[in-house]
Amino acid sequence: MVREHAVHPFAPVWDAQCRVLVLGSFPSVRSREVGFYYGHPQNRFWRVMERLYGQPVPPEPDGRRAYVLSHGVALWDVLAACDITGSSDASIRRAVPNDLPALLARGGVERIFCNGQRAYALYMRYLDAACNLPVKALPSTSAANAAWSLDRLTDAWRTIL
Image (tube, rainbow, N blue to C red; front, side, top):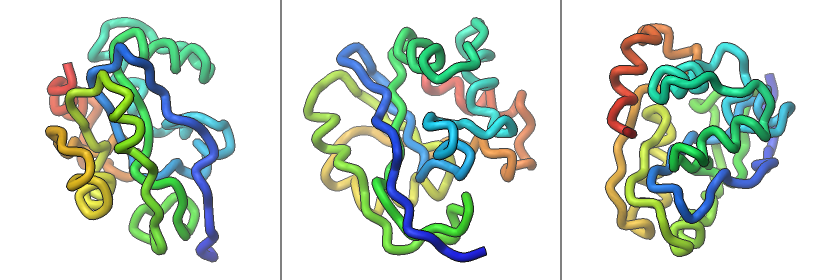
């Protein structure tokens, strides 16, 4: 596969009531196609959310947006643009970070959680010094992280509550 230059195609999910921000690295090919976060059916993010909050997650983007906002959770990604091969975080080059400090200046968010080690490493490299909030890496909900069962992921992600 060829590395392509990709620009983040959708806005953050955020409102003033959000206290937690979950950051991915950059949307997968499937997420870019559907125009919303964690759009690949094998990604376990939405199944983890269902388990944490004890309510079913709607299948459509507008319902998912309302779902996370109702629980005070904001969603975004570390990167605004990058050169990437498919959905491979390991292939990311020429990374351009999102303007996270501007979002945080609007208030609300108290803690940041990175979905996976690559998101955390990118956050630490490009954004940590400018954001000045507690940040924690959580295990990736990607299907590529097959070593983590859904039960184990859910237990690790309980910290966002």
